[in-house]
Image (cartoon, rainbow, N blue to C red):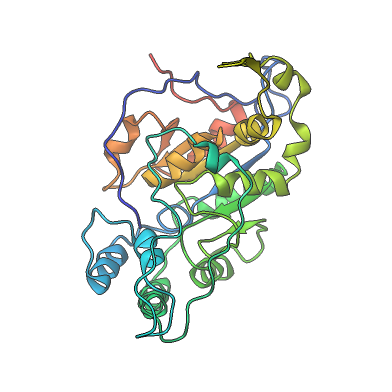
Length: 310
C-alpha cells in the first residue's frame, strides 16, 4: 500500500549466508545458523491482489505517490466539526535511507483511537471494507503449503509482518494454513510498531523470539567508538543491538516495503517475483529472488546465500 522509491544499485553489504538446514550437508562451520523467517502476506502467502490498492486510492482520493497508511494517519481523529485536521503522527519513512536515531530508540504507540465520526475513522472503515471484500477471493501462492511444512519439519520459527489489518491475515491462515503456527503476527494495528518499510516489525519479532539475548558481546567490543567534539564517545549498546537483531532472519516478500524493512533490520531478503515487481530484483535491498515459495526448500537445505554484489 506504499509507493516504492527510485531504485538503487547493487548491494553494498556482503551477501548474507546461513548454514544448510540439512544436518548432513557439509559446510563452512563458521556460517551462522538461520534463526527464523518472516513473511509478508499480500502477494507473498497469497497471490497478488494489486487492484485493492487502486480501489483504496480511488476511495481516499489520493494519487499513487501518497502512501495509504501515512494518509490515514494524517487525517483528524477528532469528531467532525470540533478540531482541524491533525499533523501526521509519524513522519513518512524513506526506505532508501538508513535507520534514524529516532527510529532506533524505544517507541510506543501513543496515537489515540479515532472517534466514531471522525474523518480518520471513516477513511479506515473504507479501507477495511475493501480488504474484507478482497479476502474472500484470496488464493494461496504456489508452493505455500510445501514450504511451510518443510519449515515446520526443520523447526524453523515463522512470523508474519504485514501492512494489513488482522482480519484478512487470519482469514488466509484459517483457510490455507490451519495447522501452521506463526508467532508473532505483526499488522498495521500492532501497538507500538510502525508499519513497513520501518524495520521495527522485524526487530519486535526478533525480540519476542529472544534473539536480543543472542547478541554476542564481541559485536559490541569490536565497534569503533565514534569521535565527537569532545573526543571519543561510547556507542549506545541499544542502538547496536537493534542493528544486529535481525541478522539471523530472512524477510520474504514481494514489495519495496518488504525488502526495505528486512534490509534495514539487518535481515537477509528474498523477493517473490511476479508480473509487477520484476524491477525490484536488481534493487540494492533485494538479496535473492524466487518465482515460487517452494524454491526456498532446496536453497535452505543446501545453505542460503544472497546474490553476489559483483
